[in-house]
Image (cartoon, rainbow, N blue to C red; front, side):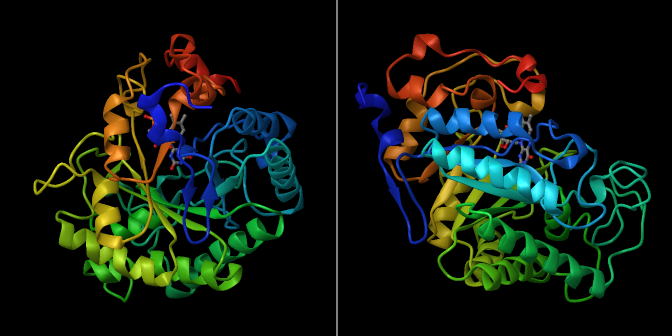
Length: 366
Ligand SMILES: Cc1cc2nc3c(=O)[nH]c(=O)nc-3n(C[C@H](O)[C@H](O)[C@H](O)COP(=O)(O)O)c2cc1C
């Protein structure tokens, strides 16, 4: 029961066409590197289960690699193909469902951020729209059209597998400068075929992925699309410089079958464009007509890319935006990394028990 009226908006139920949740909280996707051999084990399942037991509305898993040899960097990042990894994920779903939670996998390909020689497939070269790293260095050949369509199919297969093993939907990772975002971003996409050029053409890869996933999972299975303006190497980067540019990206994605947009920012309170105080999620909701997830330093006084510890802060500003319907759902990252009971503590008015974020949370499955 909600004891504190000021946090009421966070504990209203959420209902959209394909997804209903008991409250507005979402666990943000966070790479952990605790899956030896790329297989999520019992400890990973228990880690997600703890969040479900403590009333997180929707869990988005850490990024998990689609079926391509260069989709992830490292042998402890979970993948989403092959019998043992998919069995591991099926167990994660079982644990979360037993605890009454809902969970979607974040489908990921790192693209050109992979270093040559990275595990688990040392000989797999990084791939991307133009073979360019985020800093513009040419490392490999641009993906051929055949490679692009095989990649689209790999996302679709992952979506089908997610549905088959019991997940409650999927999230497609189109943010932060990874593969899909490398197509969206002018700096990394210098193609002159149908996947490059203007914003509409740069969005085509993402659109084909969403369409292919939608075809595999049918009309009722939730598809969330995560995107960002910022890139890992450039926090000021933008794929849309104005609301009308943002609309050019969103509209075809809506038509392709996105149910919910997850708009990744580092600080949720920052206005996205000059025209109003709306943040990226607020603009996305307004322009797309779809429900949106906002994220970025909820409950903390420092953003995650600073890599340092952060103290807890008031949720008043967040509640105001939620109450104004600027966005529908709120993803929480580091606060939930540190403390599986963050949501329950907020709900029960136990703010004095919240823990400040410490970097130790990165090396432990609390
Ligand atoms: C350890 C860590 C790993 C992350 N891994 C991912 C990831 O796999 N996929 C993704 O989209 N975002 C990732 N992020 C970004 C978070 O999802 C979130 O957007 C960010 O931490 C901001 O939320 P916060 O300020 O509440 O922590 C990661 C963040 C952290 C701290």
